[in-house]
Image (cartoon, rainbow, N blue to C red; front, side):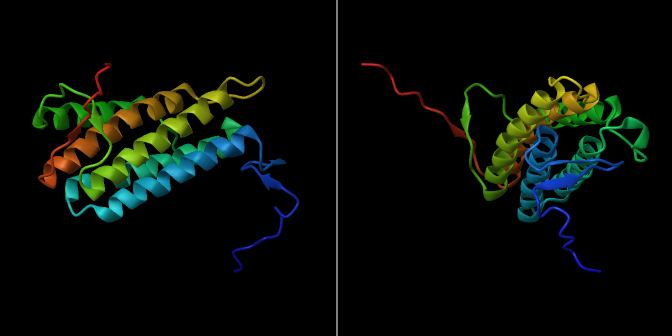
Length: 185
C-alpha cells in the first residue's frame, strides 16, 4: 500500500465522515496543532526512563489521538470511537494532585528547562497552549462545534504537562530553575 494518495495535491484534504476542505481551514489547523503536540509528547516519552512518567505520557498521546479524530470528524454521529469525557479530565486532575504532593512547594516562577525530559515537557506545554488556542478559535467560528470536554481537557493538559516537567526534574535529581526578575533601576 502506498503512503501517498495525491488527493491533497490541490490544497484540499478530506474529513472523516466525508467532505473536503482547504488544508488552511481552521479545523485542519486545530487538529494539525494537536498532532504536533502529540509528536512533542512522544519526544518527552522517548527521553524518559521513568516508567510512571512514560505511562502517563502514552495515556496523553492516546487521548490526543482521540482529540485529533474528534476534530477531524465534525459530524458527531460519524464518530465511531470513544471521545473525550469528564473522566479524562478527572484522571488528569487526580494525577496532578498525587504528583503535586511529592513536589516541593512552588513559591516562584520557574524557567522551562532542567533535565532533558523536563525541557521537552515544557516544550510540550507551550505547544499545548498553542493547540488549545487553535481549538478555541475553531469552537468560536459560526457553524463549527467543538465538544466542551475536549476544550476543558486541552486547558487541563497544559497544567498536567507543567506538573510532569517538575516531576521529571525531581526524578532526574535536577532542580527547577527559578526565574530571577531583574530589578528596575
